[in-house]
Image (cartoon, rainbow, N blue to C red):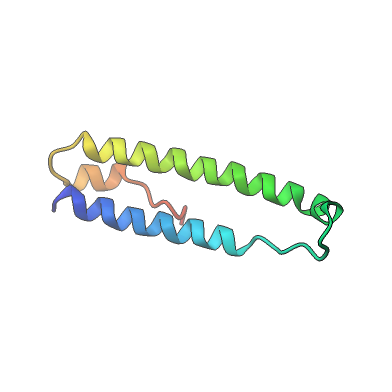
Length: 84
């Protein structure tokens, strides 16, 4: 199997993970800045999670660009990004 196939599959899984993370963000009930205060911890945890997923994605692409051909060892070194 070529590395492009595995790279595309993993990119799709990571895109789904980021989309699900965005769907969990709630809209504030008010229009003033004070309405954002209760959502600040959730927003900051989202930013931290997004950074974590970005680092994972970057490392994953580095791994796939360092190989010539995907074999069983590479598949086992490529963990499931969903954590399942």
